[in-house]
Length: 415
Image 1 (cartoon, rainbow, N blue to C red):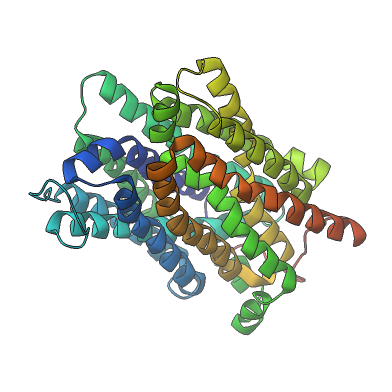
Image 2: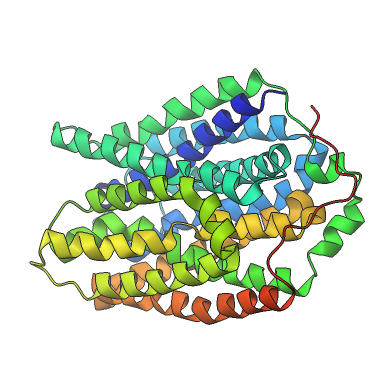
């Protein structure tokens, strides 16, 4: 087993996932115009990306130990390739206004294509999180944050590629979406060339019954509920960011997405030292405070606001949301290693299920009340999280401090 190669392949597959996210946001206006869709309908079209993710990551919680991580990782790449192809071939409806997205072949193909991409995204998360936790069982929070630095890394690559294509006069949304086929094909080749280990739970001899039992631990259930709110806070606004920031500032919205992604990319490499100094739960309290301030500030911006003010507000939000996803996964893996891939995938699935619900709600608020109100609506979520994570931090302090749980007799990962 080559840990370095497997980690690099995992990073590329996550980069592919976030390229879908940023390019999808950039082409939203052109795609909605081509298919005669409202913002709310676009939210519904995107919804299966997250429903599909949820289904796939839940299923992977069990299948990853049965089929093996290599088979599923390769399958995720094929899902991207098939999904993108289906969307590219979708014919626009020959009407001025679409009453139902299920009444036309083209919009059904869009829905199906994004569903396939969502399934691929879920499989990627369902494989790479337990893979990295297995390979780096002594440093999970840090390595998961470094891995997930490539989520904003993909946002940067996809966002800049779309931006420069636009600046070069290449405005066809199909050409932009087709870029996703490149990294998907690259990591497929990498996956097929490597040997994969067994998961940490299987290698340590923990039974499936014990793994399932971990899902009913009280603190895990609280963390699972928090994952709904952290993901909606982080990724809900992100998907609409290009459109919302364009509406609020008259600046190219994709640049804001690239800028915040750049901050996240850098900061996630420093998650380990930060977590060791203040503990992961306390870090999440700080994240929630900054996210609430940043979202409310962004929502208060008016047309004509200076670029400096807009980027300052975006900076606060970006710093706040940076550590949410990987730190939640890290805490789950460190506190419940016997829960194996199941608990990590339940966390990821809960997060994406929240996005599937949040996207049309944010889109509806955008349609009815404007971009600023939509962001301030989301700002309520991190306010709730401040108090919940503070309670969790106090709980660990009462227990003598936050410490990762080790599986007795855990073996080194083997291929």
